[in-house]
Structure formats: C-alpha cells, structure tokens
Amino acid sequence: MKKIKLLRLTMDFPERLAQIRKEKGLTQQELAEKSGVSVIQIRRYETAAAQPTMELIRKLAITLGVSADLLVFDKEERGPDDELRLQFEAISKFLPEEKKIAKALLEGLILRHEAKRWATL
Image 1 (cartoon, one colour):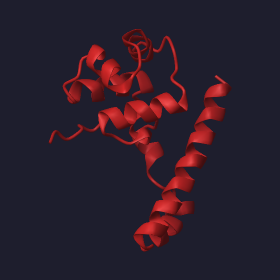
Image 2 (spheres, rainbow, N blue to C red):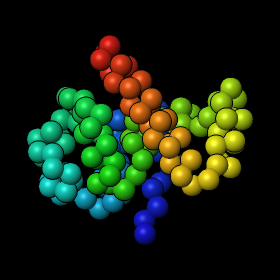
Image 3 (cartoon, rainbow, N blue to C red):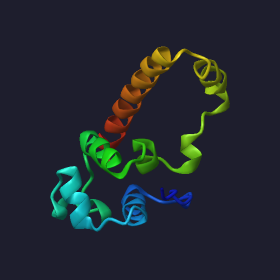
C-alpha cells in the first residue's frame, strides 16, 4: 500500500487533490469514473476553476482512500490546538461505539464550518 507523502504546508485544495490523485496512480479520467464525477469537473477542481460541494469532497476522499480533512486543510490546521487537546485525549479513551458517535458529530461540525467558509468566498 502506497503511503501519502507529506504535503507542503501552503498547498491549496486543487494542488492537494492533484497530488493525492497522482500518488494513488490515477488519471483524472480514472478518478472521475471511480467517484462518479465528470472528468471536466475534476479538471476544474484541480485548476481552481470550480470548488466542489462538501458531498463531492466526501466522494473524492472515499474514492482516494483519504480523509476529507487531508484534502481540505493545511497540515497546521489539522492538529488539535491546545484548547481542544484535552478533549481529544479524553475521546481517545472512549469505547469504539462512543468514538464513532464523537467522530460523526465532529465531521458534521467540520463540514458545516467549511460550507459556511466556502459560501463567503
């Protein structure tokens, strides 16, 4: 299994998408077919001519086998800040079912936040 190389800290979504796609050995056409997105849209996303919806980011992440946050966030944005570190440490001790619930809640909040952020661009 191929490991994803560390991404540059200043990389934007289009660059991340293209890099991860290439690291997975996929062409734009193959990614389009596997994710159910047109190849024209994949090209637009990779050239920053269009921004995908949160649902499309989810589809792309699943197809590429990575988390959506890897596609969306810079590395420095991905780690918990000091304010939330204790909460995440506590969650890491939850039972698997409790972790699943916490993860779903957090993913929903993150998607909502990103949708609001993108709506203001």
